[in-house]
Image (cartoon, rainbow, N blue to C red; front, side):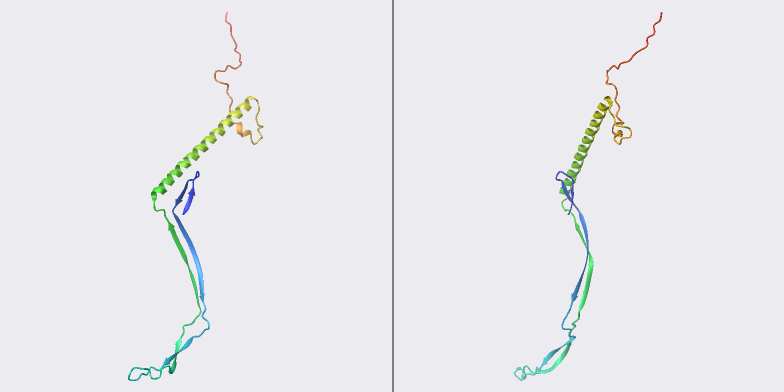
Length: 167
C-alpha cells in the first residue's frame, strides 16, 4: 500500500496500482540427441491354456520417433496489481485527521509569521527612533523600509504658533 504521512504520527494508506513488466527465457537441452529409439516387440503366442509359449523372445525392434529436440522459450508480459482499502470508515477517518493536522500546521505557520512580522516592526521602529538604519545600498535596507514611526497617541510634540495681536 502507498502510505502518505501528514505529520504528528498520521499516516494514511491509499489505493495503489502497480505495473510490473517481466521477461524471462527458458532453454531445454535434451542429450544425447537421438531422434529415434527402438522398442522390442515380444512374441505374444500362447498355448491352449493361455500361457506364453516363447516368453521373452524378441521378434523385432520397432523404430519410434523420440521428439528429442532442444527448445528455447522467451516469455514476457506485464503484471498489473491493484491494492484497494476495503474499509472506507478507517480511510475517511484518517483523511479527516490529515485535514485537521494540515489546518493545525497552517495555523502554527500563520502564528510564526505574525510573530516574525511583529518583532520586525518593533525592532525596526526602535532603531528608527534611535536614528539607526541600513544604508540604501545594503541588501537589508528593504527589511525596515516599510516601517513608519508616528508620534505616540496623545503626545504633544514641541511646536510653536504665531500669534497675532489686534488693537
